[in-house]
Length: 279
Ligand code: ADP
Ligand code: MG
Picture 1: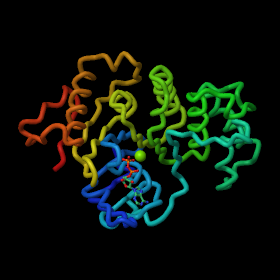
Picture 2: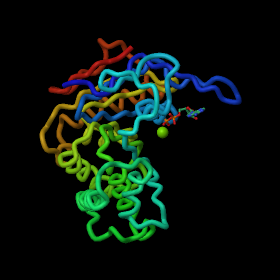
Picture 3: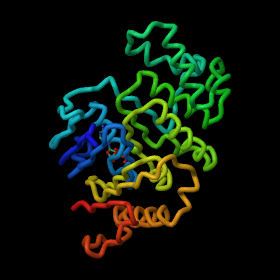
Picture 4: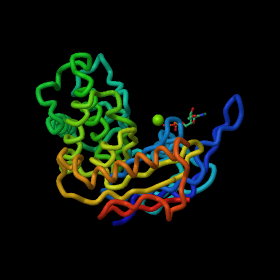
């Protein structure tokens, strides 16, 4: 598969009032066209900084961020983003919140079609009938669904989800995972998901990148085997258990709670899952 996003050898240091803060040092992340890459790593290691690199909001000190083989040199408009806090505007209806990005960055799509698209997206995520409600009338999970529609309204080439389900309860979160699969089937995008939830990572993504503690480097990459249409039962298979153990172990290394082994001692990847340690 062709790489849509190719981040290589990225290093970046923030200059803060109290001194230099190296945040990225040896970051390599590849996202295939149409693929879904999850990124996990300790808090504060540089995950959100990585999303800003992809959106072109931050140009790294060293290394390359390529999209479609072209070096990113400034902000990109064909990137959709959703965050843990959906930040919907209370004085707008849900429909008008979803339409907001089209007012900020206008499209050629006639107004009627814009609205039809917004309504179609809302119905795709299960919010049909809530178009005219205000954000405060919706539950947290529903607000996150609306925020997803807003991120998709421009048909972005890349959808970046920065811990979007982190504040939701477990059942709501699992519902949203299934919605995400359905959305990806009907509204194809190339996705980058930042998450702390390893089950979420292997359920949604085809590749999981583990970052080390700050400054973040790519510590480990797990390729999740394609199991076809996924349902939650896939998370309770022996294969899934092995992948989760492996990732948990890598996170412990990233957090400095377990020693890094040489690759010869590293646990073997589960059958069908290709893994590479990065050093
Ligand atoms: P994560 O998303 O993995 O929790 P971030 O990428 O948000 O981590 O931040 C990594 C580190 O860089 C944190 O210590 C954060 O405080 C710092 N940081 C992020 N953005 C800036 C900035 N613009 N200027 C200075 N420091 C920053
Ligand atoms: Mg973050």
